[in-house]
Image (cartoon, rainbow, N blue to C red; front, side, top):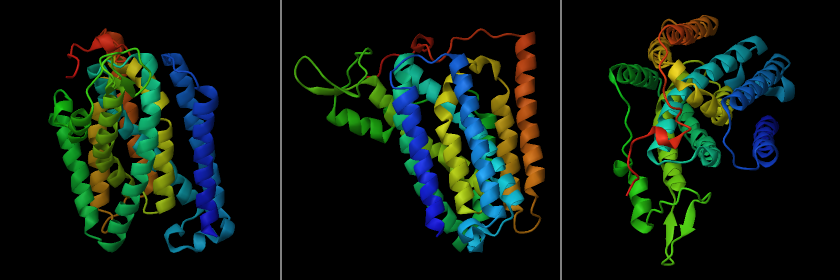
Length: 338
């Protein structure tokens, strides 16, 4: 009977994506920061509404849900774990947003075309995250020592963010980008809304939007290596892991346009991610000996993010830094890719 719950969730995701893309965002356009913030709020409210369903599902044992070994949780504990996992995944996606903005700027993808690229990027991310979560759950269940490995990965990621002064992207080193360019030339027509176009000589060529999509999909795999171990430190319930991850991803498109447009105002947000990753990594390594209650983790994670956002806003009022939005491709001085 538990397949009914999984089926309900997958149908809900399909319905939300269909409404988002087929009704509210059918036409390509440049999304304003105000509109992006409004949609980000809507996606957060949808996730919170689903968390109410999570509470009822576990609390009242609908369809014998908590009789399954991996779902032995009260409604309160399940809701706390879902929300904590969602908050962690949503926070870590901010780092992904910075890189996505750099990719769009590098390939000079116009703002009105970025929405379409992100749509396909998020759909691909949903599939890849599902596969990687299934693999991670299997590893965690079979090898208890893997918790220490995942914990070290998170701490190493925190150190990497801390010591990295300036992130760079190198499409020329990306194997998939090189593979695509081996079969298709690159069109420098920035007005086309297609991923493949026909050149005057009759050959098919990939557009900058297509190359940006390839880069986004491959970088998401790298970010998943951080975010998925992080959720394992919060919960081992496959349903909570998958649903919190997917809801964080579904709102990534609107969050991108909101954060990218205000990126210069969040200068200390990445530093807060350092502490978040380090804390979650330590929590995971202590899970078998000194488990930290999820209520404590929720308070710590919320505090870390609040300090990072608060410090950024305070610094912005004292020392404003006028930067061009990554939504404007002219913000990048990079040359067009060959």
